Structures are given as C-alpha cells and as structure tokens.
Length: 318
Image (cartoon, rainbow, N blue to C red):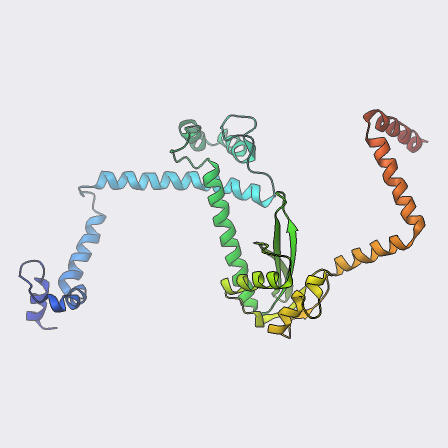
C-alpha cells in the first residue's frame, strides 16, 4: 500500500468527508488492516493496563467481584461434587442457613465455614436474604451447577465413545421415584483394550412399543452424532417388544445395521430361569410361602418380634 493511500484511509471517517456510501461496506475491511487502525488498537490495549485510566476504580471493583464470586463458586462446586459423587440427597425441608433441616448441601457448607473465614463471612452477610439476591447458596445455583456438570460428563463420555468408534447399546425402561417411566441407555465401548460400561442418560419414554423405543434411541444417537452403523451389539431383556424377531427393538436396529448382534441380558435370563425353576417345585413354593407368612406374623407387632429376637439369641448361645 502506498503512503498516499495509507494517509487517505487513515483519515477516512475521522477528518475527511465520505460520500461513496454505495461501496461503504468495503471501507471498514480496508480500515481494519490499515496502519492507523492497528496503532490505535495497540494504544487502546496499552491504556487498558494503565493505572491512570478514568475507569480504573470501576475496573478494579469488577475484578474484585469476579474473584470473589470465583472463590465462592469454587467451594460450592466442591460440595456439590462431593454429594453427587456419593449419591446423597442435596435438599432438606427448607433452604435456611442455620436450620437443622436444611439438607446436606447447606449443612456441609456450614461445616466448612467453621474452618473457613472467607466462607463464614459470605454466609453471614448473604445467607437467608430471600429471592432477588445472588448468594450461590440457593437451589437455583444447585440445579444449574448439577446440570452443567451432567452436560460436561455426557460430552466426555460421547467423545470417548467416538474415539473408540465401535460401541454396544443396552436399553430398558425404568420407573423413577415419581413413578414416571423413563428409558435408561447404557453404552459399552473399549478404552485401552479394556471394556467400559457407562450409563449415558435417561430419556422420556414416549411409548412401550418397539417403534417408540427405536425412535427415542435414534433421536439420541442423531443428536450426539453417533452413527448406528458403528453399533456392533445390543442387549435387552426378554420382553417381546425388545427381543421380537420381526417387530422387536433388536429387529428394527438390525434392519438399519445387520452387524448389531443381539445378546439377551444374561441377568434377566437367569432371573427367569430361577423363577420358573422354583414354580416347577411345589415343595419350594410352599416353603417360601410359609416363610413369607412367618415373617409377616412376627414383624407385624413389635412384641412378637422381641419374643422372636430373644428366642433366636438363646438358640445361638446354646
């Protein structure tokens, strides 16, 4: 670029008039690569770090607030990770700090605060202020952090499955604590020549037919860019909707990928074998029926159970 052109573009939009609005969209692009714009950008970044800025106090307040929030979140996320890893309940009957019924999340934070002056001061000032105040102690931040951690964990599992390329699927419907039926999806793949089994997600059960479950499975695979052609195996229980030769879920998967071999769930099969074997033996049926009635007889009243406990202790000692 010539010196005259550079001077012309450096003064554009600042000291000279501009009338060629028909081609105005081309001018900013040229301006971004001009020496004047680059020098101005460098000078601006240099001034950002200068102590003599007009908004230096505001900037310092913002940085202090960011550091403060990071310190609080570091402790909060640590507690959430601890509780989630052990499968414990988070909430209690209320969300009041100081209450003996506020749940594991707030209770553990209060315990840490006894030995952490920073957290103790934060709880003292920010806790129990009600809605509209950000304190990172409410169920809102709790659910948000759990959701973020779950999404990150799912992305990590999916990335490992893609790295392994080939995988097996296991799908079943399970009712949760609220009696809502959900589909549970488990993926098996290899890491460092060793098989790994990971629970992936709960999916809303849109129906119990093979077609409904197949659509739910394909929706998940397509969402996470997992090719059904890389599925080399599938394992379900022995229900007809799952193992049906023509209309079962395994048949519909094999229509799309005939290499996805179906293997019946051995645990479910063993359970059916045991159930049918016991039903074939009348003596075993009567024995377990009597055992169940005996259990109900002694446990229905505490007095009877105490008598049984005393009698059993005497038998053990003798």
